[in-house]
Image (cartoon, rainbow, N blue to C red; front, side, top):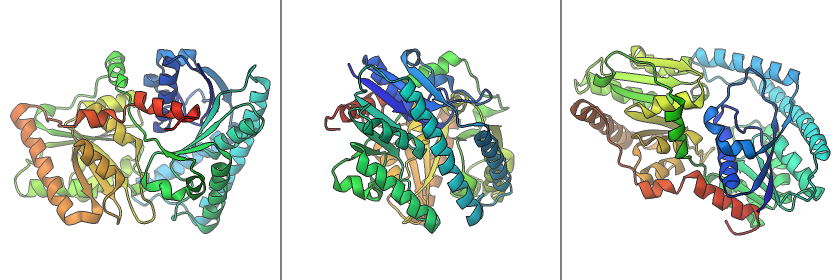
Length: 441
């Protein structure tokens, strides 16, 4: 069996979507008998915990915690509060270019300081033999810096850099984009393999692509989380008349309005205006920190009173809310600037086995996310770039859901289970294991 080093900024029990991928890969590697050591930032006492991630395999993982420092957490907390106020006002939530640049450079400084502490800790806890591979995940870039150090020092035989998403986007200001390109290219040159979760985004990894190092290994879901939901005993908040209402749910961020639900609320309002959907037949449940943005979308369609907002909650509670709904809403974007955005929430929606309404904003049709959802037959896909055809299909799907709910008491999902199973984390972990041990993925 092999011995692997994981370097992550998000890992169990941290309650963010970014924790899921590395944690689930580690879980299934441990189950196969491999040894895992995880280097991750120290979690503050008040940081939310995701108990679903804390399976029995995690008790067999060796954890090394590295603090970011008190100043980092104070500044991060102020940033979150400011972003929340901006988003709540219905704006884009975007900071000025100067403030964006200040945050970027402070982020690099924080990552460098964290990487120094991590290298020191690893030197103090050096194993008897080199790790078979070091696996680093982005964000943040400090994880790759530590992995490069470990690989260069011969403390690991291979280095797999799991980017998930590119570091370089056209919306970034010129200086930030140039610096991120240099940082990303340096990692691509030095690693033994680079991994990306989106095929459409592979074009942004030219260095590792030319060297034959680039691999596509998607995000996914763990079906065993469903059993964890049952064990947790979490029940959604009761609402009067839920059995007579179409219950839609959304969990996660709206990025200051970049993830735009306007088309969905407009379609619902149009059906109501035509008398096809009773005015009081909708309940829209939300778990996340962008209530102000969501309320702006709903109120623009006159549907503000249909909202039920839970705020930021543990992942288990958000999943339970979605599991008990009639359809799960997933939103992302696809544009000429940003192609191949594959939100991790989409895979959780597949796991839940409820009909999925996928909204893709942006000026480029044929999104990778939309194509995946169509391939799995998850539900309705609306792409802003194909607005005319998309609106009619969305309206028809919503009406069918409502008639199923009122006729049978439950909406029906019709996913292709075999295609869906391709995104289960036990399969994804096997692909990653092959890459980490030097085989073909």
